[in-house]
Image (cartoon, rainbow, N blue to C red; front, side):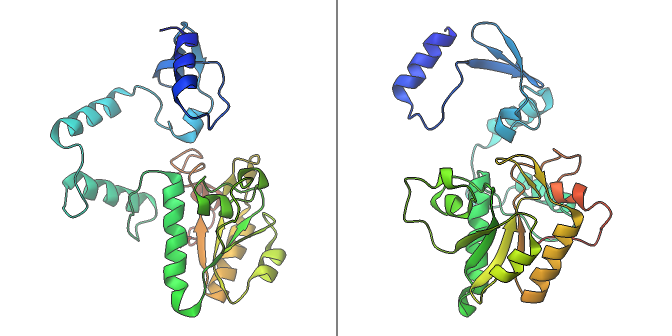
Length: 249
């Protein structure tokens, strides 16, 4: 089917949540994708940060085919070997301590952080999370409340309570914004949606010290800057290369 035919079918039947480019992609190989009208394009966005392993990788395709031929889904009521192996590798990449929570998306991962913050601070009434201006944490109701961009909030009032934004990199304002209800500080080591704003080692170290001082969780959103996009598994590991003792919660 042609580019225009594919576009017409999608425009007719799919809710227009995004303003699309007039490009219909049929397949990809490595860092390139191919369109229905025969063009070969360089995927500079990695599928909006989700195709970090490229397209059509033979080892990945083989692994997916092998697993699909065995099991397509197993409830968490049961144990499977691949889940344990993957969790073990992820924990090692994250520094060797902690445990893994598997989910389907970055927004869902962040939702788990919001719930964890509230669960930890429930008895003390510490439910609030400080995030930063210009941040992006997903498009769920809580995600847009956490996000520091007004454009994603428009039309979805009233906002989920418990989120306030402070300037990115401004430790003084962050400290002053903490209240008895504050339970965590959530930042992106490298902001993406509002431009490539990279945290300094000093900023992350100061946030760690502040959170330890005030008994807060330090949460890092690595949805866009993690998974080896900066050379290390996490973006904060690249930024904090000279500070091996640093770690978020």
